[in-house]
Length: 458
Image 1 (tube, rainbow, N blue to C red):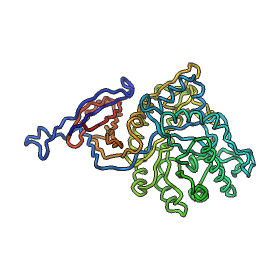
Image 2: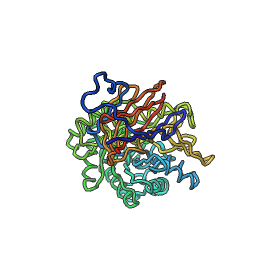
Image 3: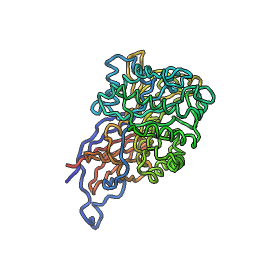
Image 4: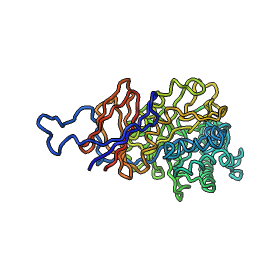
């Protein structure tokens, strides 16, 4: 038996998901004890892979089909639209996304504030998702031509009349409308099904701890649990996952304990989280340890930039932030990873309710209406080191690195190929010796470079 290695690299200077090497592993350590002078023993610069130690199952990586993303994409020519879809969702021509998030009515990255219901309609007779059928679903249909999409949905706010401040910005859902709001969500799922948009899951509320300056709704833990019970009963015959929390990662474990120990925990399939409060990978590790049969999904990650338009001086920093976060999240128990807007226009939108905030959102890809062009950020390629090569159903497997400066995560695909992702965020080149079952392969990882090593048995 022997192994061969194919290596892809990306960095700011030379490589963009570029295949740089294909070679065999070398058997350096003889079976049993190495020679007396240790000439065949290797102990420095090692990255170990233990394929017999398996952890959680990889579900997929993707991004959000927001109204802003669909709007920016719709302004391109048909040829450029196809290029964009292939770049994200084709394994052969792009980076193979398999996961997508959609919003239930408008969010901050929508052109307008909209809901599916006439104001004060407590019968739901006026319920109409024509906006999404026209603006968002066409983009999803095109993506589905290239992959089997795992889709989940999230609400930003109920209609204003259901809330205690009579506004879709901030405030709380009135208890007398818990049942009607659950019926609204159920009706949304039914309408999606009628239009061949089949949801794998939904989160109860985006960022339930934040009173934002756009569509938002506050839920205290006990309120989310109570609403979970109502929604869970309504959806008990639906094949759909209900995910709770959907906010920053530093409280994942404590919220999980509350939810799963509550009378309504039986309706919750997992916890969604965001990265905006910092790494907190230990929260994911604790969650996976205590609740190994529950889902952990990073439902929204986005880099803030402080200049309007495409901020080139943040290109490497943002790409490395994605890679660091994806790598360590899966290393600590995550199942799914979803970026925020798939794309934006050259003005970081379109959006509403976000004026004069002093910061803008970045995206891995920009659709430039004025020139009918697509601009790929470095983060697109860095995310691709995971999404392109790791197949849904893969297992995260054990790996160890000789230095904190060389970050690693490893997966075993359903076809038994092994994918090792290695990240170097330092200003120095790093020597890497990959060791698998006493076979080794050496390569150099340049400064500020990410590499994916694909290993197959011969």
